[in-house]
Structure formats: structure tokens, C-alpha cells
Image (cartoon, rainbow, N blue to C red; front, side, top):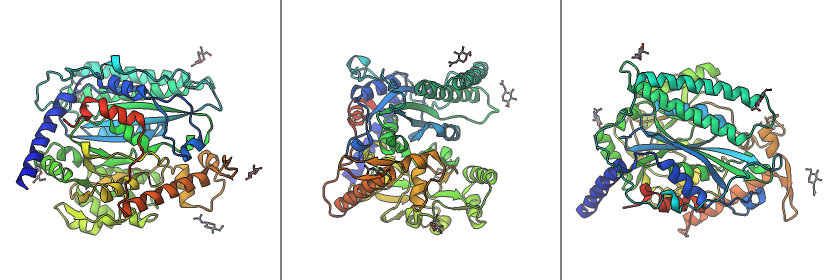
Length: 500
Ligand SMILES: *[C@@H]1O[C@H](CO)[C@@H](O)[C@H](O)[C@H]1NC(C)=O
Ligand SMILES: *[C@@H]1O[C@H](CO)[C@@H](O)[C@H](O)[C@H]1NC(C)=O
Ligand SMILES: *[C@@H]1O[C@H](CO)[C@@H](O)[C@H](O)[C@H]1NC(C)=O
Ligand SMILES: *[C@@H]1O[C@H](CO)[C@@H](O)[C@H](O)[C@H]1NC(C)=O
Ligand SMILES: *[C@@H]1O[C@H](CO)[C@@H](O)[C@H](O)[C@H]1NC(C)=O
């Protein structure tokens, strides 16, 4: 026992040192791009290839990496489509540590065959990836927020960003053939510079509250020769891709529509909390905060107010909002088993962490020891079983325990349901008017001659994948998640992914 815990402590100390050395500097974006694109497959993907097991073909168009130094031991990672950038902005304003975000754009070549024709696999050997002496000579002090800030410069930068935005929006709408890659890149670039500028401004002015996360932002594009896949985002490939930008001992995947309570900022700076979580996650355990959402009867404006209060309030406020039916357990109306395992009534009373048993379909978000996260199974695209299967693998293959955190919670921000979820929740709906739903209901003829719809073929593949995975895990058969060559290559060469 004592041997084990001693080696854990040694590992922990090693990790803390490694992260302080690694997580600074400006080369990370280049390293990521060059390892990722080295294994890029430029052949456009087709729907049928995916449902016969082919991984997503993502090209990393660009990457931005905050050069502000970090001393927070937890990286949040997340992925999203371009229309959710404002949610990422909210996440970034609410967290003081690093956030690694992967943004996805589909490029449908049916409409414009020239999209992404300049994407090429590149050799990553002369790009610094294998270079040694990577570590920098930074002091290991508590250096959050000491980015070289002076308020005035920050203000100018904000102004430039806004001008850039306006110019950009005008430029985008006076022509029908705006390059979607250039548009997406400009939007990401603006967001990145905005966050950096605001952080610098806040750091240079004691009367402003601290802001923002250290953003690591990656833009991924996927070329596809037909359109069905464009509505079926490669959610799990994107989660893996975002995970690559995590450098700290601890990491947590929080989807973009999820807001951790602001109390997280105190916790991640509290040495005894960090020590406790590090010990738990190396057991291994996933440390899980319960998720809340606003009640359906509220108007959109009041929903946002409730979300804001639930994020910024203390636990007693959240419980009070729950009692007054402003908040409810996440998805309690549509998927009782997804979050029931938390036992929210118990959470209300506990001020100590407690363990719960995994149950099938359990879908918590949570904090892991970064190097022990087995990653996501990329066969799951879209919004069915994608996260659940990761949790199931943690529980049943990797023997994780589940530790509920009494002092951390997450709140779901309301948004329009994506097409797949609309169809899944109301399977007798047809049409619906939404373009996404229409696209999913389009007929496809599969190569076996079967005439079906995109959604039916999707459901069929997802359901069968989940059945296979479940029975493998239940009978202790070998189960390996599908992970693409780019992700695996990056993990094998990026210095902050080496186990030491
Ligand atoms: C928008 O229109 C102006 C003048 O009509 C033109 O000069 C400019 O190139 C257009 N913008 C884009 C992005 O094409
Ligand atoms: C600091 O922020 C406060 C509050 O927004 C503002 O009134 C003040 O002018 C700022 N000071 C400097 C030096 O920018
Ligand atoms: C840090 O966390 C511990 C336990 O989690 C708590 O008892 C202590 O009050 C916290 N310290 C501060 C400064 O918040
Ligand atoms: C399904 O269809 C039935 C009959 O058309 C309708 O009454 C019911 O409300 C529909 N269910 C949902 C969830 O839309
Ligand atoms: C497939 O079904 C659609 C209607 O859902 C029909 O229009 C089409 O002709 C069918 N194609 C084949 C090859 O059977």
C-alpha cells in the first residue's frame, strides 16, 4: 500500500513539474498542427464510408495558443460547431485556467469542389516536434495573470478586434461565395484576440475582475463528397482532438453548452482541493459535478437569468432554485437514468465527496487524471451514446469509481436542439421545417441496395455500435475505442503527452 501511494506521490510531483515546464511558450500551436496534419487523409469522406467504420478526416486549418502563463492544474476541453462560439466565449470568461477548444466545420464538396483543395498532409519532422530542449526557463512561481499586460494596449486591441469584426461581417455578406474556411478562421481569430485582450486589460487593472481562460483554439475542417455527414458532427473525434490541447495534470471535458459554477476558480487554486482530486483521479476515479438545467416553462430571458444565478451563486442558491422549480436535474424529463445516479437529494445534504455505483446510461461530465483518460470512441458521431460510451468504458473496462463532488456543479445553457436530438426525442416527427432535420430525413440508397433515410441509417449504425460495445464490456471481451491516426500520432510525439 505505502509503496503504491509513494509512487503516486512521486508521479504527482513529476507531473506538476512537467506541466509547469511544458505549458508555457508559443510553439504549441505549430506542434499540434504539424503532428495532426502529418497523418491527414485528404480523400473526401462519404456517409457510407463512415457507417462502414472509417474515421473522420479532419484537417487542422489553424490553431491559436495563449502565451499567457498558467498555474492552474485543470484544463477544460471542449468541441463545438461554429455557431456555438459565443458559448465558448462564455466558458472562457468564466474560467481562469486553460481551455482547449476544437471547432468543427464540414466542407461539402457537392456544392463547391474547390473547398479545402489546399489541405495537404505535411511532414512534421522539420517542424520542431521532435526537437529537444523544448522546456523554457520560466520561474515556477504562481504566475496566473501576469501576462505582459498594460491596460492601454489592451484597449487598443479590443478596438481593433471590434473593427475587424465589423469589417469582416460586411465582407462576408456582400458575396454569396464567401470562403467558409476563411470566414471560420476569421471568427476564431477574433475570439482569440478578444479573450487575450480582455485578459490583459483585467490583469492591468485591479478594479476589474480577473478574466479570462488561457485559450487554445483549433479549427478543424472535414471535406466530404456528399452532404449527409455534414449534419452528423464527429463529436468524439473532436473531443479527442480538443483533449490534445490539455497540458495540466487534470482535465475535464465540458461540452460548450455547459457552464461550470464560478466556484471552480476557487477550487482549482486551493492546494488541498487539488491534492484531494489528484489522489482520487489517480485511483482511478472520475470526479463528477452534478448537472442542472432551467425548467422548460421559463421564458428565454428568465432562463438566462436563472443560469447566471446558478453559475455565480453558492450551493444554497442552487438548492433554493431547485426547490422553487427554476432549476431541475439535467435531462430529468427526457432521460431519467442519465443523471439519476448522482442522487441529487443526497448531494443537497453532503458536504463531503461520496462514491456512487455506475449504472447503464449514466452520463456525467467529470474531472480525470489527464494521462489516464482513455479517450473517446470516434465511431460515435452526432449526439447519440457519444459521451455515454466513454463513461461506460471508464467504469467497466478501466474500473473507474465515480466520486461526486459536493462543492462543484455545472449548468446547461439553453439552446435550440440539434437535428439529431429533435428526431431522437420525437421519432414520429416528419419535416419539422428545420433544415438540419430535413437534411437528416433525406433518402439515401446504400451500396447494398437498401433505400432508407440518413437518419435511419445513422440510428441503425449507432444502435448496433452501442450494442456491440455493451456486450463486449459486459462479457469482459476486448474493447478498443476507434481513434484516428492523427490523434494517436500527436499523442505519441507531443512532449506534454509523454508519460515520463
Ligand atoms: C464586397 O463588395 C465590394 C464592392 O462592391 C468589393 O470591393 C468587395 O471585394 C466585396 N467583398 C468581398 C469579400 O468580396
Ligand atoms: C480600471 O477599470 C475601472 C472600472 O471599469 C475603470 O473605471 C478605470 O478607468 C480603469 N483604469 C484604468 C487605468 O484603465
Ligand atoms: C480549501 O479546500 C478545503 C477542503 O476542500 C477547505 O476546507 C478550505 O477551507 C479551502 N481553503 C480555502 C482557502 O478556500
Ligand atoms: C406522435 O404522433 C402522435 C399522433 O400523430 C401525436 O399525438 C404525438 O403527440 C406525437 N408525439 C410526439 C412526441 O410528438
Ligand atoms: C427510394 O425511396 C424514395 C422515397 O422515399 C423514392 O423516391 C426513390 O425512388 C426510392 N429509390 C429506390 C432506388 O428505390
